[in-house]
Image 1 (spheres, helix red, strand yellow):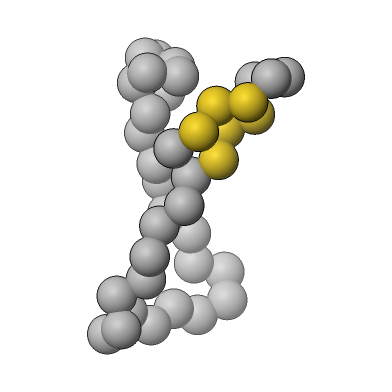
Image 2: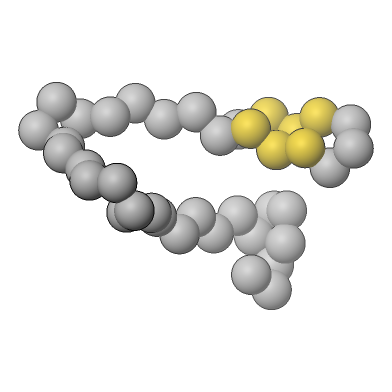
Length: 38
């Protein structure tokens, strides 16, 4: 995780080889260091 000027947050993750996804799927990421109420 990196935070840049202008309240820009980047999150980089690796995908496990057995992980498959389809269009329209999403994930919810909580980051209390950025916003404790979300």
